[in-house]
Image 1 (tube, rainbow, N blue to C red):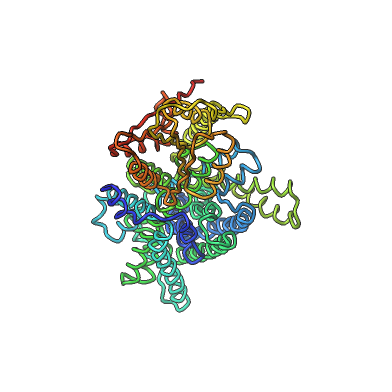
Image 2 (cartoon, rainbow, N blue to C red):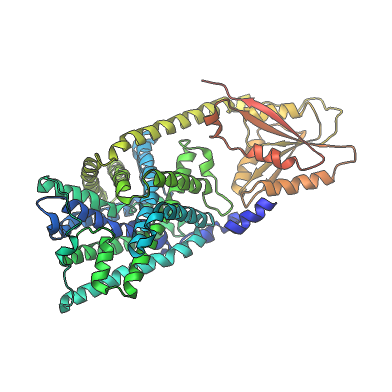
Length: 623
């Protein structure tokens, strides 16, 4: 009980299943929650472009002249992606983005590449965004530099706790700072252009950069340009997030998702194009201790209150960009889990109706990355855009296959949009991977295939288990005509599903008592109806069926109440026996793939004085 009180204090009161619709997002809050990653990317995309351009011996401090020409193809790709993902939202309302599109058009195994790419992309979103947020904070408060890693880790933990409190509550917390960033960037761009028109905006003195630019490469111009394009493509990460999280929107979900996607495209287009033009006029170049955004803010506002609002909102938006991953990755993991590519626990909603296991997984892996790379944004960036461009390309190609198969009215125009998107994103994938290969992207050639291999092994394990415990209609055991026993102590059989394991448990229960109750705990009326239909297949005249609801998804609470009631009905000399199936798996890693609910049931029931717990083992066969 003490644990429950602490949990309620940290995460808030559990939410009823009926409250799921109230947890969903409207357009006002959907934009900042699901678009913070894409919107925040512009805060460091221009920085990456400038770093790539200034490294060229033929360009150097003249990088600002070429920045707009790098931004133009990125903006064209942005517009193409917005229209392309609109088509995906229209045809795949269940979410999952490129994984679902690829599953439908290429099959589950081929789609696994898109699924793994999404997982990698969202994990990197958290690591990159948090490290970039810390860097922006250091630009405003240089004394925090020695605490960079500690600040980053604390930020991830804080964001995790806020997301565990539920979608609606976190959207209010994350939404306001995102809008502050959008408006502060908008004000900077508008004020900057007004000063430019009136002649009150002065380019930055080149001597400021004298001691920061001392290493050049002798690459030809086209290679420098393509490398800058590859670096700037980080501005596009997060565009796919809206299509991945359609289930998180209020009805009409698809319409609201489309509106958020359009607003996202307009916002990124305005901020990215505006900052690139300002950087061009102000002759901005990379500077130690100052981001490009902070240099633009200082040139436009000076060191006044607006500069600090811009800096702190930039730091916040980069931190809150992780919220896109926290909203989307758990959904992707739940879909992968339902397809048996990930542990089934990822498909379960927590007490706050969020996929809490996915949220915790994201926190752990992101913290490990931050520790390994010491929260260095530039070292993390090479791993970033590759995953998202894989998912971009597969989703666009999948839609091409869909149009050629369905040939709906107006399909030619839609196919053209997706074909253009597939071509541009494929080129982008090749360019991004080529130029980031030496910086560390080569590791993805190991990480992605390894993750796919592990997921295939997980699926094979689940398929093996399903084959072992599956029961055909003609194999269902009729055990209702067994002679009654003399023993009258009541016995409760915990039933999670009808399979060979549960039938073995029922058979054992009939050897120790004739007062049998099958107990099944469900989290929805739909699941109750489905189970009752399955139960009818068993001729269990001598076994009562009790189905109890767990609308808050915590099964211990309704079980507690039910056992309390049954214990009060006992006579003085009676005991209540609770029988559960215990799945025995010798492989430690395979154990992690299975729900540990029976273990928690057993531990919890041990507090009841008149309850006897019996575990009936069911051993998985090897091979």
